[in-house]
Each structure stands twice: as structure tokens, then as C-alpha cells.
Length: 403
Image (tube, rainbow, N blue to C red; front, side):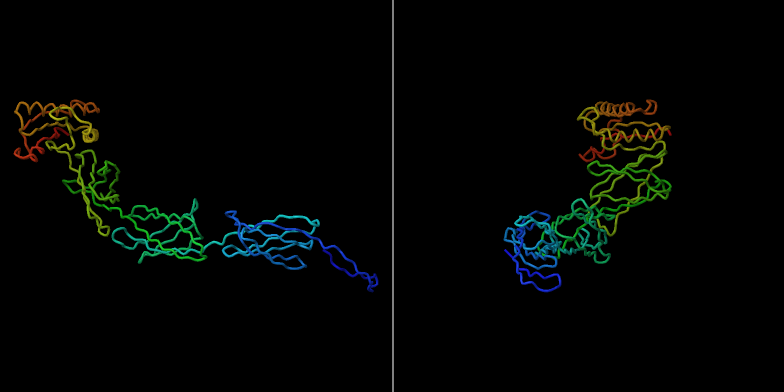
């Protein structure tokens, strides 16, 4: 290809010389791609040769383009594709050789979708609206946090684009909640709804006090659920405590303190109303000579005096009590129902009382602080004419002898 050019004389006059000058040809080719996925993109291209001319290109469906440029110049390119940010790039061909072939790919940045997420934070079961902070995480980064409003529990937040979002809610009085939502949309603007339901914890409060005088006490109390999972709390100087329990069911409470019999109490919770809460006072009974305490969960092999391992947790509480009250001495009393002969029942109850005493001695209690007596069937607490009564009468207890 050639171009014509007129030459002028030095004094400005025209010379009748017409020259044909070869026009450079530079071959440019490449592909338009998605910068995030590297996939090809069909797009429109506009190029401008600085101080020269303008041209337009269209890629094929595979995102490829080719063109021949006829100026050695700095070229600017503008690439436009719906769903992507407008791209501006340049290439310097001022030193390009004739008939050179140059490869130039363009990488478009996907346009981020404008996502509006809204919903309500509610209490599970009742649907009661809750005010709470909501942490929003995408991948490994904390994107933002939002907060539901206090009256209706509703929230609105903007998300930066497609992806898997994780939501974390920690609200006092409720189980922590982690939830997720995957958003995939081709729309530049979209609205989504997501509600969150928080499971309430059970709020239990009350006072720990002296059973004889009602004096308020600061005491460390251990409590356990039906799966024997333990936790603890300490009542304040005014005897007050306030705890959260994870679920309904039965809970046992235990405590030791010098000068008092071990605290052993329980509560069974069902149909809990979070708006009301629960209250339970716990009472510590001062040690008095002659007082008797039944030992629960003491098990023996059938018709034998051999302690079963399930008995050890209850007996360890007796050990703790004696260690807490080093001046206290006790009697271990064994009792049976009326089944069998009197001699047989005396011997069986004595053997079982001895087994409990031996366990306490093995755990470090001095032998002069514990005696054991088998009473057989002679001190029943209930009738021996029913299975329920006989079960009550089969027991092990301790009596305070000195303090």
C-alpha cells in the first residue's frame, strides 16, 4: 500500500513532484478474556491512533480479533462488553517494523453485582423479633457487619457480588448461630431475602442460702446435665447467681462448704418460656450431730457386697465433704428390705456398709473418722409391701457422729 505526498521548495513554492511512499502495514491480533476466569469473551473494540485516525473491531465468538494497522503510532484501545467494566489500554507501535505481527490480549474485569440482602432475626419457636449484630464473611475475610433493628428485628445490607456468604450471630441468651447463603446471579442488581432463627438458652437464677437461717452465701456450685456434662458457677457475695442452660431436661446441682452438708439438688425443665425465665433457690444445710444423709446412686452387684464403678462419683462427693470438714466423723449405715431372713439381711447390709467405708479409706480418709453398721431391715423408710417401697428401703446413708 502506498500514500501520495507533495514536496515543497525551501522558499515555500510548490514543486511539481509527486511521490509514492509505501504505507506501513502492522498486523495485530489477540484475544479478549475474562481476567478472573481466563475464559474468552466476545466484545467490541475501538482503537485510536494518536493524532491519526479511529477504527472499530469486533471479536469472533471465541473472543479473537485481527486487524491491520497503517500508522506507526501510539494506539489506545477501548473494549466494551456488557457485564464487564469498560477497559482502556494502549500499545506503542511507533517503532514497529513493516509487516510485523504483534500479539495483544485484553483482560476484562467482571462487573460486580449489586446485591441487596434483607430479612428478619427471630427467636426460634415463638417468632419473637430480636435485635442482634450479624457478621458477614465471604471466604476467609470479614466483609462487614450489620444489625437488625430492635422493634421488628429486620435488617438490610448490601453485598459486593456473587459468592458464598457465611453469617455469624452471637446474642446473649441464645445459642450462637452460623448460617450460609450462596448467591449466583447474572443481574447487575438483585434482591435476596434470608431470615435467621436463634434458639434461646434457658435462663436460670436464684439465691444460695443457709437452710436454717436463710443467710445468703457465696458458694461454688457444680451442675451437670443428663449426659453428665459438668459446668459450674459461684454465687456472688449476696448469694445471687444467674446462668444459661443449653437445653431443657434434668440438671443436678452439687456443692461443698466447710460446716455444711453437701448440697445435692436438681431441677427438671420443660416447656420453657424465654420471656419469663426460671428461678431456683439452693440451700446449704449446716452440719449437726445426728443428722442423716441418704447416698444416691450407690450400686452393688446383685445379692453381693461388691461396689460397682457407677457408685464412685457419689462416693467421691462424700470424700470431698470429709476433706472440706476435717473435724467431722460419720457412720455409714447399710439398709435392706424385708426380703430374706433377718440374719441374711444384717450380713448383706453390713458387708455393703463396709464396702463403702473401705472406699473412703482408700481415698485417704482416716479410719477413725468412719464406722460402718449394717441395720438390715430394721429401719425402713417406706412399706415393704410394694416394689416401690422396698426400693426406697434398700439404701446406704451416712450419719454425722461428731463435728
